[in-house]
Image (cartoon, rainbow, N blue to C red; front, top):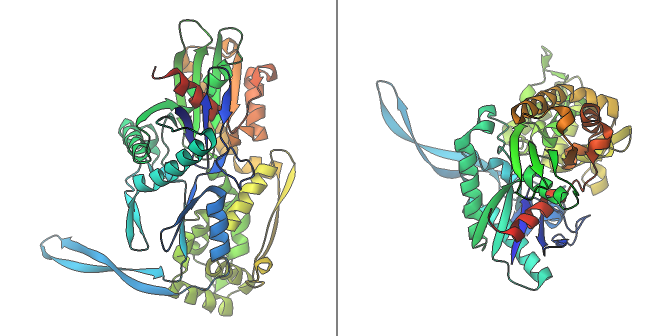
Length: 459
């Protein structure tokens, strides 16, 4: 049995095609949609692993409100070399929370094209491929359980360009793409897939659309998810096969929009704009900027940083804001804050108004955080206006390289959660005409197309 697997930055899915219909597999029994699973791992201190919503629930239940104890731990040696001076060996220590019950890992796909090799989790080293393999192996097991047969082959989706948001040049780097695909192939083989092939994610979405296309058409696929934006102009529905005219993409995606909301609307709630000390010094940006990436927030949970936060509460102009930041860090509310931001962003696709609400007292940890931040759709669109301009420029460039004019595009397939953001729906309708916009399942069309590709075999 060969299946298609869409291993996404935010969510993943798996499906099979029998020549007539696509079957999406229920791979997350506790998620809101059983056929879509969060691309998340949680590894406990005894190296038990959960994925998807189970991983997130385990993280919340074991970490919110728990005490922390930072200790200095030896991790190895480095050689220090200076010009015209003898080199010497220096011991390296890091501060770790010895009460941490588990480690949460998200967005692993985003690291495939980077130099990130792996991480040590509770004294055991995991390569990045190991972590991805654990996730894919569990998906394969759940598919086999649902299908009642062994899965030996997989077609994995891949973006046009794997995104490294910290290195814009890498987004179009062929070596970065080759590295990412090689690592993903190795992870899939470690997960038990013997036959591993790849298909571009926007092409997969076009294959799904082709099932219902009655005539040969020029199609533009706008695949906009949490980690990548991919564009493809191609011909589908012809007896002689499909033709790809052009592909494109930019390093902008839904996760970046979450960070824009946090930066513009939430940092004031956690100390930005505060002054401290007798000379009324500005509150250091490193403390609030850490909230822009959930991975960097635990770095604030260090004795010297917590000591400063306590001192800033005594001498600062807005002690309640700094106290809220301290509670966010100490009581492990960072992930919940980011989830609340994402939910508000999603709500704005159907509503004109949403709120970001976080109260730590609901979990019994205290009452230091009482965040209630409204956001309107027009505010959100203003925050991402520059990103929209970049995306529109990329769209124009991709069309020009395809050699197809706007009026030669017969259908526009929009897939991925971020493609449902109203300003992008309106942008595509304005350029191509609302009658050309194809209604498709935003979260399963790529998975379905990969399953179709798997059924057809290599080609």
